[in-house]
Length: 513
Ligand code: AMP
Ligand code: MG
Figure 1: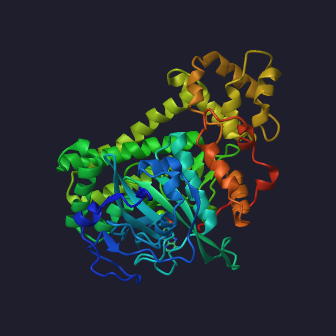
Figure 2 (figure 1 turned 135 degrees about the vertical axis):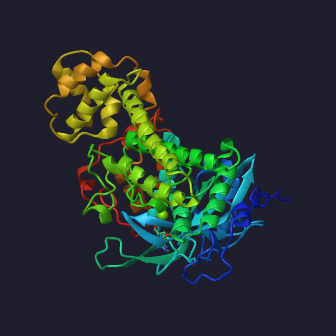
Figure 3 (figure 1 turned 60 degrees about the horizontal axis):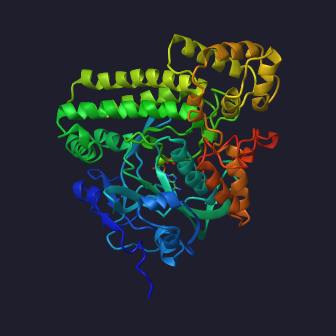
């Protein structure tokens, strides 16, 4: 007799649906849904769901094993063809500022939350991305292509292992259906294989989830959502009084500031920092046209749509984080909260960012405590890195090995991180660093060796398109050990090869996912 699958014993609770008003309609037709926080909607079945990648560690969060993932039932559920007992699926309603402009109602256009799973005292929102149309799909199809699903699946797990707050990815399921996309936005749409990622988070609530009710001029519903958020996701703040709401908005600011520092530390560029893509829990969410720094370049934006203005460039992320939080604070003002309180929260963003950023720089440089000297050394380094093509990740990795010696010995130690000639001043800078670095152990966990380099994902995607998933699985293993990698890691820590400099998917990504 077969043991009951852990899948069938998963428990769900529809708390969000229970506590917040929903859309009375049940069809998928695109529409405005005022007065609601969600719409009931089921995934649209796909032709032949097949699990092509699975994160055992994310599965363990729900009490699932590889054995469960191998069952046909798993592919049916996480491909959107079947629901488990207790699942009450819905699409969430939210709005957002996109590229600096209020865009009105957006909502889960292709994400469907299956339910909130309960396991060992934890609660995980279980969400499919690419599971078909919802009332928020507007004119789009609600689907996702394989390439972007591989990117979200791998990057969620890479960020987690880097220690950066993030949503998780449980599974990657190919659908057997084709999806039409104009990948380069050049008028040449083509059919691509479709896929669905199952992602997990305590909640996918975003800044835009609150903004929409302010835009609706619906303070009662805004308050209900804020109270729900504080009660369940920030219980340490106590009863959601006005005072607690201000403390909560300040905490959202601090968490976002800390997240921005983490992105800068590992060289991550989100690419679409619209307010609908910023988590209220301070998690990295919505992996789209993101990218990683190869050579240090403060102007780097991976998103082709962002190229004209570079609003979401690497170095602007902290500033955009603040801009987004200002929109969030304006939305909360509708609750009649004192403006000074909201402004104090925003000031907390600036203060947290400054302090955390200084400490991050000191840690990456192996200096025991941040101070004016470490900050000056850090700023001079960024200036130096701009003067030549120098790999962000490899620079810190090789820095840890620099020993006192001649100027040319010092530069030689950094050579593997250089794409071209060493910039003038590098040897002197390295000498200053040698004089200040009093805690090199600090560098080990501040400086990853293996990151999800753009070209590595693209190579894995190319192989997946010819039916070979081995490279995705190998990358998943490698990104699980970014700081103290397993033998053979050097191949996954290479400088960007020349072919990837301008290749689509490596240096440029569109939103057509
Ligand atoms: P994003 O920039 O990916 O965060 O998406 C912005 C908005 O567009 C969100 O409301 C998404 O749900 C929606 N969206 C993006 N792609 C699709 C798609 N293929 N089908 C339906 N809605 C989509
Ligand atoms: Mg989004």
